Length: 119
Image 1 (cartoon, rainbow, N blue to C red):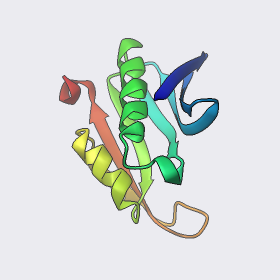
Image 2 (cartoon, rainbow, N blue to C red; image 1 turned 180 degrees about the horizontal axis):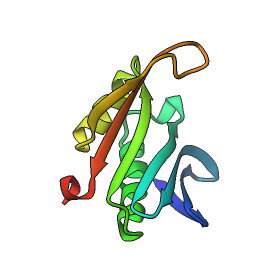
Image 3 (cartoon, rainbow, N blue to C red; image 1 turned 180 degrees about the vertical axis):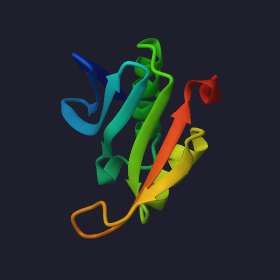
Image 4 (cartoon, helix red, strand yellow; image 1 turned 90 degrees about the vertical axis):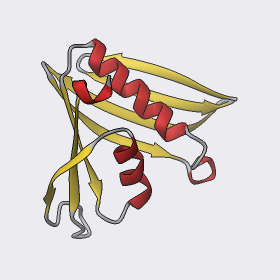
């Protein structure tokens, strides 16, 4: 059974997913006033497609909305179809792209969700 823990440090919240004592997933969000940026969401390869990423994202979103955030933005690799599908299923919309955003030159898709879309 996967266990989740949230750690709050100022404007930053981190959510960890554990299988026993092993960390198998992680997410981080930075909330400032009415906006937030999802910094990272990662799930270990052996634990993907089990809903862990979705649960981490839900917990990050819940925390942000409880803090008064109205708009949440994230960047995702153009090639990361699985993550983009998850975000689209969670009602994020593509608002633009950043050319050569990543160190290897790959573009990033910028996605956003507004609090009204989540209710």
